[in-house]
Amino acid sequence: MNDDQLLRYSRHILLDEIGIEGQTRLLEGHALVIGAGGLGAAALPYLAAAGIGTLTVVDDDTVDLTNLQRQILHTTESVGQPKVASAQEAIARLNPDVRVNAVQRRLDAEAISALLAGANSSVSVVLDCSDNFATRQATNLACVRAGVPLVSGAAIRFDGQISVFDSRAGGPCYACLFPPDEPAPEVACATMGVFSPLVGMVGTVQAAEALKLVAGIGRSLAGRLLMLDGLSMEWTTMRVARQASCPVCGAAHENSH
Image (cartoon, rainbow, N blue to C red):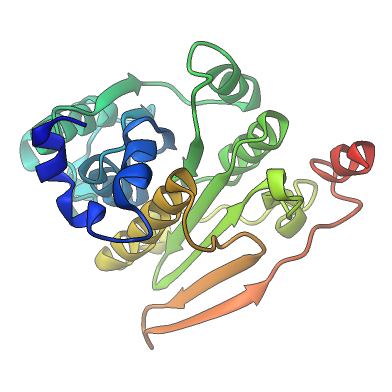
C-alpha cells in the first residue's frame, strides 16, 4: 500500500478486524456485481470507496428517468446512457484506483460461468443485484459450480431481503430457498413500485456482506435470510437449511462426501 492508500483507507485500517491485512485483501479483491439498478447503485459506491480492487459490473439496461427516484449512482445527465457506463463514470469519480469492467448484456448461467472461470477467474465474490427470478437462478447455478460466494438481495414495495449463499462452507444455495422448478411470481418496480431508501438499505447490506467475505472477517449471512419490513422498520431473520434434494447444490454436496 502506498501513502495515499494508507491515508484513504485509514479508517478501515484502524479497525482491528480489518487492519493492513484485511485492507490488502480488499485491494486485491474482485467483485462481480450483476445489476446496476437500485441495489447495484447502492452497493457499488461502498465497494469502490472501501477499495475493492476490481469491479465487474453487468447490466443490459439504459438509464431511464423513472430510475432516478432510487438509483442514486445515476444522474439526470445519465438518462439514455447504458447503466454500466454511467456506473463506470461515477466510480471513477469516487475512487479512480478501482478497475471497472463494464459488461452491457443480460447474462445466463453459461455466460456467468464464463466470467467466473475465464479471464476474470479472480472473482472473489458475486453480488446479485438483479431484478428477475431467471437471472437470480442463473447466477446461483454459476456460483455453486465455481465455488464463489453469492450475496443476494431483493427489494420491492416496502419489503427487502438479503442472504449469503456460500457453497464452500456446505451451506444452502439460493435454489434451496427458492426452488427453480417452482418459479416465484415475477414482480417489477414498474408495476409494483418500490420505496426509494429501501434499495439503498438492502444494497448497502449487500456491500457490507461482500466486503466481510473478501476481507475474511466476521460472520456472514450464510444460512440466514435477513428480511426488512420498511413500513414498520422491523428486521427479522429466518434460518435457511440446505436441501439434500436441491437440483443445484444437493448432488454436488453428496458427491463431495
